[in-house]
Image (cartoon, rainbow, N blue to C red; front, side, top):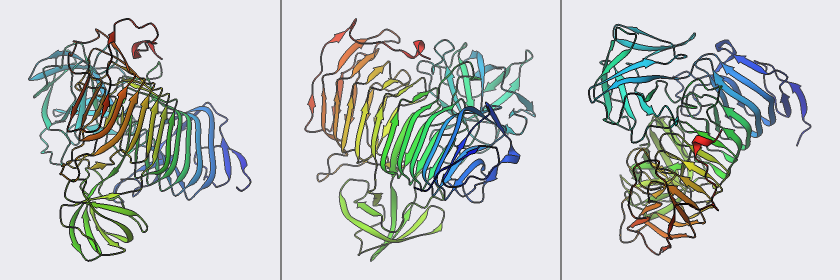
Amino acid sequence: MQNIKKTAFEIGMPLESGTCYYGDKSEYHIYLKDTVNTAGHGYVKPTDELLTAFFLKDLTDVTLDLGGAALIFHGRIAPFVMTNCQNITLKNFSIDYDRPFYTQGEILEADATHLKLRISDGFPFRVENGVFYAVSDTWEQPFNQYHLLFQPYDAKTRSPAYAAVCILAVIGSEAYDKNPPLPIHHLSLEEGTDGSLIFHGDFPETYKAGQILTMTHEPRDKNAILVEHSQNILVEHVRLIHGASMGFVGMFSENITLKNFDMYLDEKTKGLISINADSVHCFHCTGKIQIEDCIFENMLDDAINIHGNYTLVTAADKNEITAHVAAAGLDTIKWYKKGDILNIYRGKTQEIKGSYTVLSAGYPRDREIVVRFDRPVDAVAGDLIENTAMPDIEIRRCKTGRNRPRGFLLSSGGKTLVEDCFFNNCACAIHFTGDTTYWYESGPVRDVTIRHCHFYDCGYCGSDYAIMATPEVEVTENALYYHKHITITDNVFESFSRGALYANKTEHITFKGNKYIDTTSYPQRLIDRVKLDNCGNCEIETGETSSNDHAIVRTPWIEQN
């Protein structure tokens, strides 16, 4: 390692390899003039704009230690984009914006056809010609140009309201045809005489007066920290007070460590949302992903999502295939490179037709890949392609809850450990997926241990079970199962729902030594403790429920932070 020099940090200064930058201020304000355009990085198209405050490119041995300072961003700015870097540490600072990228208000009236809303202080807006505009000093966002995510919150618990599902909505007459993950609710708007706003349209019956409605209105392109094609990255003691998109995104990178990387509510938080999407989202990474002592609270998406992605064969000829990127929202990513080992599966099954080494990969247009392999390929249109490179995952002493929807989505064939974690998610706490229908997120698990965790009142907005394995793949006589070898031992399930585990198309599950406590937080669900469909070779042990187990520490979110 080269000699490390120490330099006082200043906004706008170029960052150099072999340098430790230290902060000597309590606050740093970053404006649009302090940014560079990093379009073309991450999943942002080169033709789009991504204004970034800190662009780390081709750097080695850099530490940015701001000594607890607050980074306050003024405008539509992505804080950090990192590409082709090694041995980078970001530590001891917080991230916030002058105006959050969502708007919230109190629901005054609600029924199946209308909501009457009073916008809360701190979320400036205007209405013009029937269109709602969220505004700040540097930007405004009309609600008729991008789909919004509506999520009601309970004003007392500051959690998603019981059974109050989210909806996607557009306010105005736009014909929205961008393949959204949920049906779009088309709403119209009128202003009330008392300063309220009245939205007309189709609303779930679980939306009630007294709830706080949050509405996100920003595309998911301004991640707080984006890391791509990099190695040995450490983020430590970093707090996101608010973020416009994901908290941390790692893609095509090796060895990522997050410690005390936190999102939670306190007096600094303007409303009920910490960030608009996932806390941590990593895909196509290798080495080890290590996440310790983090708080993931009040996000509008999952706490952790680690996965690969399937692509689809559209044509094959000798040692060359053409592949289609079916995953939603990922148009221009370069998925494969020379040396990658790819599995090809028969249709949407887990029957492996062969493993092949990539000689070259070309990208003639968005969502199309032409791949040359080391030998002739057994493939036909409709077959799945998966990169075999996957990380080991270790998650320890993390807390997650009061978010929509889930806790951890873990899809890696590497060794996975989750221990000493606390969950209070409105859907399930841990989800093992495998999607061949929309997101195309891949990675059957092969070695998972979940131990010494506390699952508290998970599933109050939909999921019956705290832990779920629900792959969306076809099974065949030669490939009956998707996930394998999941061990769940010595955990506490404290809940209004008896449901601890549901699994489908999974083999070799061990579930034993767990404890159960009934709660009365929500209407009780008297269902099977463990439910298995199409599973095999499982060892299941369920015990008696205790209503007052003094050996277990109760830590509901309402008592924390």
